[in-house]
Image 1 (spheres, helix red, strand yellow):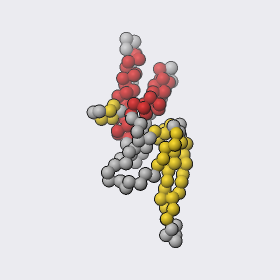
Image 2 (cartoon, helix red, strand yellow):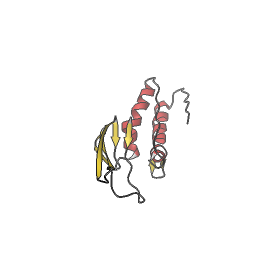
Image 3 (cartoon, helix red, strand yellow):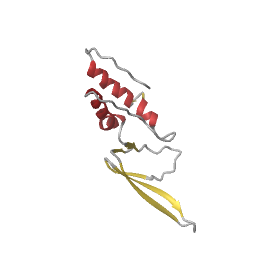
Image 4 (cartoon, one colour):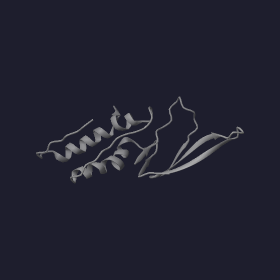
Length: 127
């Protein structure tokens, strides 16, 4: 399981509630309020297979998280890559990309078809 922290947008409060500490460790700082109205911040620490921060581009996410799945397919295995999260959390940006930055789908297709060029192979994809 991998997670990606997206940059805050202009409509969001400037308080950053997520800190990425390493390639697989992050902390969520969740503002809370007690019954007596005292405010505090609850820290929740999480570990994942990979954690990406807001500076990591789609190429880096692909190289570390999706490309190893393609290697499994080339070795005869099966693989699935999907994005899950709230609306506005960056799924489309990561998977589809945009004019200036390719998404994981395009990056995987380039590697997949580059690997099988000249071979008599049929590719089946569901989307």
